[in-house]
Image 1 (tube, one colour):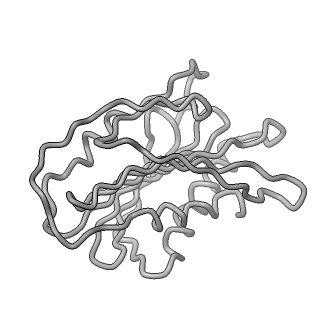
Image 2 (spheres, rainbow, N blue to C red; image 1 turned 90 degrees about the horizontal axis):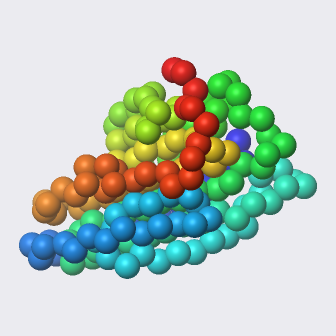
Image 3 (spheres, helix red, strand yellow; image 1 turned 90 degrees about the vertical axis):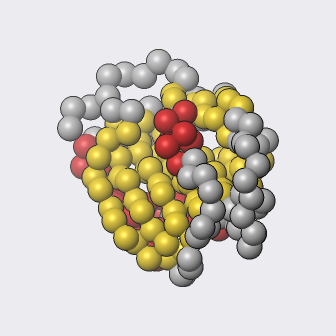
Length: 184
């Protein structure tokens, strides 16, 4: 499904240095007005976008917010794309999008999927994915909320400390009122 082919881009942002550090991280909240979310990063994130094709007639920007810490061998990523209002996100389509996102992660060269868990994230349908890209561990949450497809990725090099995955994922929150999440 073309709508979620951008998931593979999440893997490309995980660039790591070869040394590990022990410097204490200074976390700051970042608020995305367009993505209607807030999340904490241990560095100033870089924001980019690119136009992607959803259908031949329909293009939307993919917004990528990246924070990489080469001295700590960590990378943090939030990506989102708005799903056009004319696309009705029923449960079946949402599940198809999530499954296609996982397939795209698996299709990326060098990635090995270790575990995929259908779950919810902040009450919305999601997939939790653990993967390897070379020797680097990737932990991801793919979910659909408020007509947006979100991807959160934490990447970590072997032997790096500390593991900041929980802090990153726990800090994520939607900033606009949303309808009640669908029942599982």
